[in-house]
Length: 232
Image 1 (spheres, rainbow, N blue to C red):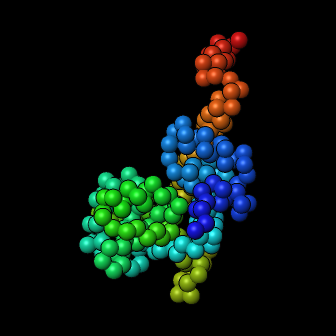
Image 2 (image 1 turned 180 degrees about the vertical axis):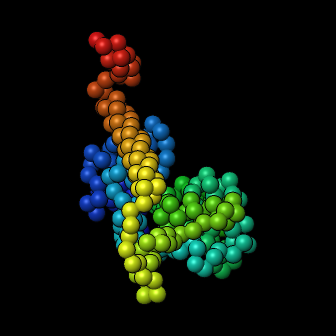
Image 3 (image 1 turned 60 degrees about the vertical axis):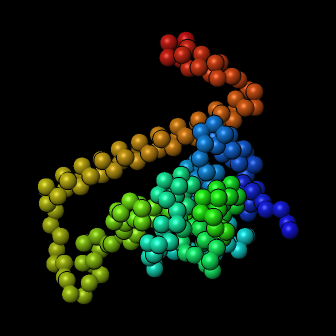
């Protein structure tokens, strides 16, 4: 049997990431933990849907819908909530008497499959779902939250498309204009905070990689930052 390839190598071969990006993501994982695929998405090296496509096409792992049809409660009960949240997985269905189809964002994560097999006593058959979908499914099936996977159009879009509604003329409204300006400012502020958070994540990953490559030590970088604060 051919050796199973690791996710990072698979994504490199598919041209989604390069060697430096993989090393940066692995360094981030070693220092801060987390799933490699999620880290690559967080660092904006590749999109989650592209990673899922590569895994599905390369490994022949089927994609599974976690919401339609709904997963039966007796299947969900096969894995406790804390374990599903710990490993970021969802039990999908039971095949025969001893096989559990398990939705995973990284079907090559042998460690997680081994852990779930030990916990459930069942043979694990991996299926593919995106990490965001698994998190929503955990909220829905384990936490009892209402999860909406579709995004309805705004009233304006619905009205423009409808043959039963007629927009005679749009008259600017001062209150509406002010509200729109405030909403835009809030959106810009949220985008700025998200950009700053993404930049910090990338900077942390690069610093960790440079430390591992012995360019400098943590003490040296801390001293350098302190000197900058003092204006030296």
